[in-house]
Structure formats: structure tokens, C-alpha cells
Length: 106
Ligand SMILES: [Zn+2]
Image (tube, rainbow, N blue to C red; front, side):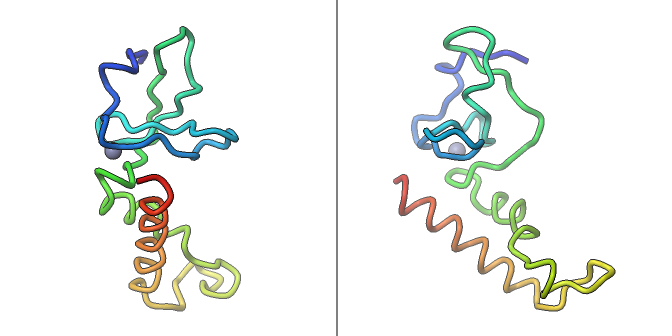
């Protein structure tokens, strides 16, 4: 799906470094992050279907989304993928990531 960037971007949410470019390539569209580089024509963006919640306007959902990644698989998970630390620790770490986004970009 191709959309005009300008009509969709929320002015309240800053673009952030997210999809690997050295510049701010992640933009919030309707509460989800999209790769602003993924475009066939200037001024448009191809929306991805990854449903990455925006850390600014959708921060609770972003915390849910990234909390799994906040675990050190080698030391904090057993062989069956079961957590060896409380899930609340992961949520705390994820909250910190969101706080850092806010410090860095707002
Ligand atoms: Zn947003």
C-alpha cells in the first residue's frame, strides 16, 4: 500500500533512527512505525505490515512489542525458551528504552 507521507504523519511524533539508516528513517503513521526509505515515488511511503507500535504515541504497545528482546537468551532463558527472570524485569528494561527515545528525540 502506497500512501502520501504528508497526510499520514503525526506531527506529534518525531522521526527516529529505526530501520538501519544513519539518519532518521522511521516515521509514525497512525501509531505504527514505517520505513520512510521504503518508497517508490518521492513524497510517498510503502507501508509495511510489521505493526511496530510507535514508542511515542503508542508507548505501552511498544513496550509489549520489544519486551521479548530485552532478555539475554543465553543467560536469562533456559533451553526451552522459558524465562529465568521475572517478566517484570523485561518490562522495566523496555520502559527504559522508551524513556531513552523520549530523551533523545523529544
Ligand atoms: Zn506516534
